Every structure is written in structure tokens, then in C-alpha cells.
Image 1: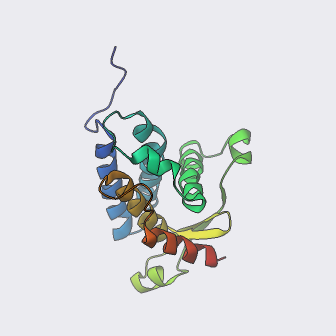
Image 2: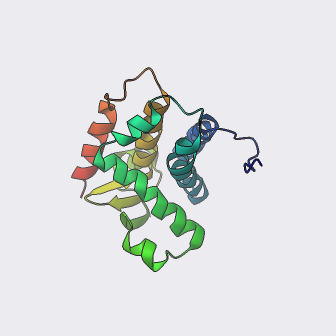
Length: 171
């Protein structure tokens, strides 16, 4: 019995393309609906689709296993943001395990928001503060690395590492 009930997205690569599409929408203009869709897609691509897809990229799971701690914390924060937005209030058990310590209302608080005149949400995860622009940038680069089998699994992208450092310095 086929337990798949999907419509139009049949594998993790299709979900990756959806993430890029939603990342483009978040990059055009801030809207909470687009942020919600981006978080939900990123979380389910990371947590559900890639681990279960027999057609996933050859090195995807090995790359996930070698993901640096600060990037992994950001990815795990998507669970909090997805569930917090879907269910309005996190269950007690989920709240105690959360990675996100604060979500800041849309404001202009960094150069990207200033130069585009676009207020953004900011999310604190551990010692780092990420704008929605940062999240989109880091997440799309991360999944591009996961889906590119031409990049070795032991070569984590330097652009991600450097950007994570900048977000950690914001606090």
C-alpha cells in the first residue's frame, strides 16, 4: 500500500526546489506568510524528506551528519518556528526543548534591512541572532551544499561558516 499522499512534490529534490522558490519570495519582500512557508518547508525537508527519500543525493545524509553545531542549531530551530506558528502555543515538552529563545517583531536592525528599507523578524538561537535575510541566505546555501554531490561531504561551505560567525557577533 502506497502511503504517499503528495501532490506535485514527489521527492526531496522537488521539496528543495520549493524551498528555493519560497526563499526567493522571502527575499523579495517580508511577509509573515512567506516566512512561515519557508520555515515549514526547510524543517520538513531536513527532518522528513531527506532521511526517507531513496532518491536523495548520494552524500546528503553524510553531510547532515557533519554539519557544524551552530548550523545544526539553526536547522533545529525551524522545528520550534514551524510548530509555534502552526499550533500557536508550544506544548510544555516542546517549549522546554526549544532552540529559539526569542523572536523579535519586524524591525530594521541590520544593514540588509536598512538598505532595502524592509523590516525583518529576528530570531535568537543560542548566542546568535539571525535576521530573516540571514536565515534565507544560510538555509539556501546549506541545502544547495546538501544537494550537490560534486561538493565533497567534508568541505563545509566557507561562506556559511563566515556568515554564522557574523550572526554570533550580533548579540
